[in-house]
Image (cartoon, rainbow, N blue to C red; front, side, top):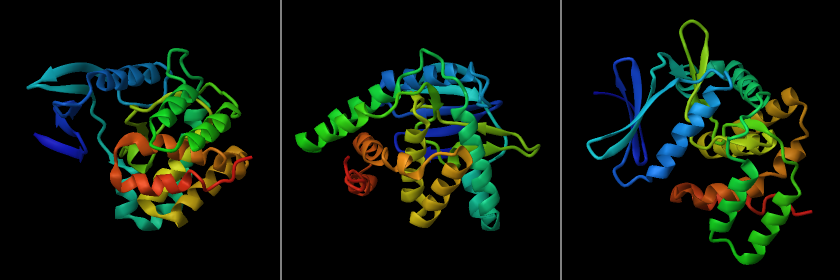
Length: 247
């Protein structure tokens, strides 16, 4: 078995022409099926993503089979060739903006609904949860495809210059600036403040979006991400809940 990547509660390995995402035996069946449905729905938009092949149960573990894409992620390339940072970040932002330009299938989960549910699941006090709900309710509702967790490790570049976007477990239809806020937080946690700011400035310039508008999503997105169970991230994310003053 060729292991492609190990993550908490899941492992991705190669099986011939397929990449297989194998989940721990105690992983939620509904979450596995939801990820597969998300991928199938996004695939129908025509975006360049690996084709979903099958959902199966093998040796007590749920698995998602998809087309294997030969190439390297942008994260791998940046580690190997740090001098390409500007080029890779520019291409990454262009890819994200192209995702947002794609009309979402009407059946894709709504970002506002997901955020509201996640806020209710946090351990924040009732006053803070109320303030976050009020802020969320005031945000415009759009119907753009949002990856929900996009980072450099989610874009594969092939030898012939094509790209493919992977890991659609958190895909929703909603506001592109919320999606950018999530990517900013992910960059902050993974690469530090300087590269996160570089990403955000690029996104705002290329998409003609006010930086303050993306930042206004940060408390909401940080709160929603804090319930995912990654303790090493939780404390840092909760600091962002109050990083922007409420209107």
